[in-house]
Amino acid sequence: MLRRLVRSFTHGHQKSTITKDNLFDTIPADCDQECHSCTIKYPANFKIEGGSDLWQTGDDWATHLIVATGKSDWVRDVSDEKGSIMEAISKAKKPTNGKLKVSASNMCPPPEYYTESSKPTTCVILPSWTQVEMVTPDDVQELVDKFISPGPTTTTPLEPQGLQMCTTKEAKHDTTITATPEQLDAGTDHTQSTADDSISDNGTTQSEELATLTISATSCPTAADLAASSYLKSYECPHDYLILLCSHKHRDARCGQSAPLIAKELRRHLQPLGLYRDLDDYRPGGVGIFFINHVGGHKWSANMIIYRKKAGQGIWLARVRPHDVEAIVKWTVLEGKVQPDKIRAGFDRSRGVTSW
Image (cartoon, rainbow, N blue to C red; front, side):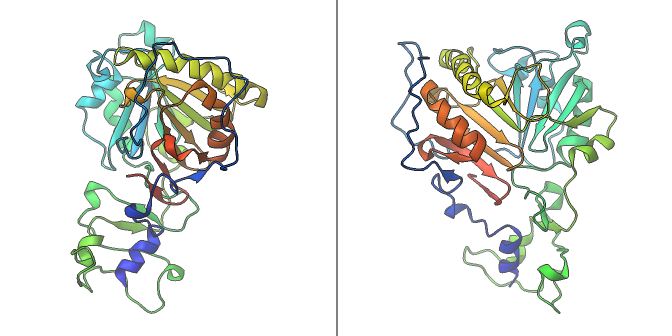
């Protein structure tokens, strides 16, 4: 009974059932996915590994922090950049809600970044889509405690989805379940998980399965809620979509070569749709395109991570070529559909599924 209850709250998610063919909807088989008007080509010496399966080759993350640096290339390890947010994050206490992925980006920092010794800059937190302004290295623990740890993660269901699931290190010994009467069997006491300690199929007890879960009827904080809790100025990131391209030439020349060419082709297809947003364009909606540092797997350049705000999705693609871009804009960015052979990892909060 308790096992069925847990699975109902987690949308029936079982990792073993998620594959590259069903994590996201697939592009129709009869679609011509190659752009025939594309004239951009990679350099003749641009060679990548083409034979291996990309599925689940990307590391998992709970929250993704994008830091504005105004640069498109960085030192080999961005946490070694003295006086930077990335260095401060590496030394700060970790978030309580899971793994934090940190990316330096070419997003434009404020003018004060170049004139003040504290180097205040802008950060975007995903998947809460919160943009925090004038963050200095001294503010990093505030950023973690007030915006990242209490915020939604890649495994938090989108609202409205009934109950929200919280899996934090602090919650691992809390076995209390709170639910509405409509979501529980009538007349049954579900307040204690220790009532039935039978052995499950994988050899764990039901109380052990619930030991890392607390389920609450309260909703996750919104960007406005998070803003109200901190002295740091923040607001909801205005874009509807974000496309992140690895451009870290110091790690691999192919990333430095591919990212500008892919960005150019993205611009060509997004501008006629009124969706292109350059680095200084914060009009509501549209697609923001940022270069970021090394994500792993440069042998599969170009690497592209697509975030879709309203759908609650993050889609990590690799082996992206310029003539793939038209189909990616039409099907993946706008529709959430993918070519399975290009997926490395991803999550879909609306369905409560991930690749990890």
